[in-house]
Image 1 (cartoon, rainbow, N blue to C red):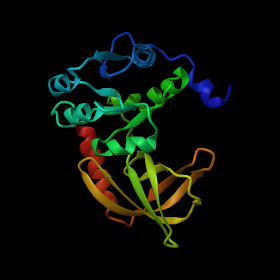
Image 2 (cartoon, rainbow, N blue to C red; image 1 turned 60 degrees about the vertical axis):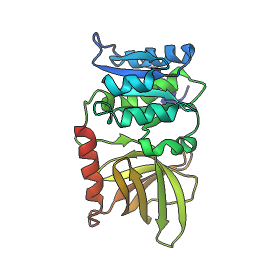
Image 3 (spheres, rainbow, N blue to C red; image 1 turned 135 degrees about the horizontal axis):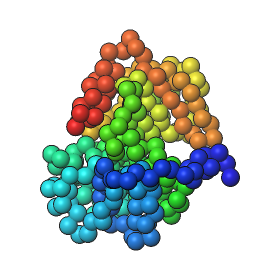
Length: 237
């Protein structure tokens, strides 16, 4: 067992009282059981939704929602994001790849559970995002979100990546493109209510095996302040 798996399956203290609720939409029973068990370990309660999911999300308050990516997902996401009480909930997709999830990026999908569900992977994802669900946030919070990121290198090479997390100071993304730490780049992306912006930065790290890299925004580029403003508004919501 590798270190990541060992960490994912290690015992987690179970909260006595649920302090947040997650809606499970269009999820089969076997998957619901795995999701419910993993969320419960962090004191997060799950509620199963039926065909009336879109209507209920307009009226009932939830901290997060897991929705099966497919024909009905768009209506559910639209309902959540236009609801005054749920517009900032943590939105998980179930099934598909991060690339496929980009078709829902305008709804600010935060993360995707891969199928078939495996308990260690689900627990690892819940562990990584539970602070956002519970609104117990670090001072320098990183928000998981999946959106398309356009990248231009200093030698004018252009490619597209998929975001993993974003903070006021930088962004991490997934791409198979060759890119090296220290390399100056400019990135462009849009986030829900934040129109597409460009920000200069430098590659701060690269994980070749995971095909991910991190970008630290240039402190001299005032456009990065729009990202901070968006994050502040997201957390306040």
